[in-house]
Each structure stands twice: as C-alpha cells, then as structure tokens.
Length: 120
Image (cartoon, rainbow, N blue to C red; front, side):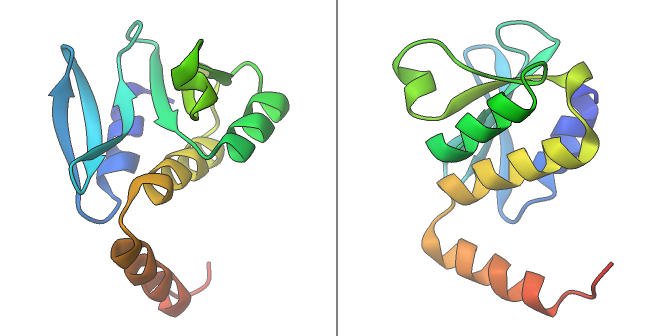
C-alpha cells in the first residue's frame, strides 16, 4: 500500500477531512483525528483503534501493525507500515479508526447506508 492509497481510503469515509497536524497529514471526522500519515516517517501511517482491535491486528499482522509506544498506544494509536499492509486489512483498520472516532449519528447513518448497499 502507498500513502496515496491510505489517503483515498480515509477520505472515502463520510464527513472526513484532511488537515495537518505537527507538519504531517491527518484525517478527521467531526474535528477529531482518527488517522495520520507520514509520522514518524513517510513509510508509515497511524490509525486510532479500539484497544481490542489493536491487539488482534498487531498479533495477526505484526509486520504491518504495531502499537505506538506509551500512553497513546495504550489508547489505541497504532502504527501502520504501509508497504506491509494488505489493501483489505488496511481498509478495515481505517474504517475501524473512523468508527472509533465518529459521532454516534454518523455511525448510525453509515450503518444504515451499509445495510442497504448491494452485496459484492
């Protein structure tokens, strides 16, 4: 995966906007950050996951997902090594980060949209 793939996946989610935080891109829903790109270097991103999901992703895909050190990591901040992440796993992680951050009204709206979407 590339930074551009990550960006497209994040921006595809409802009411997501790209801003900048500490000189690198971030992705926000309702003004709250759920993902970032380019920190600590250009080969990585970060997703803010529920701790249980962070545990399973870093256990199942240790080359792609690693908890951030310290308190941020304990709160779900998870580094993503872009090159090591598969498209589907990264898409699920970004979506989980969005859901973990989005207001309830958006989560419910998105669930409704998904339940009416044609099956692939």
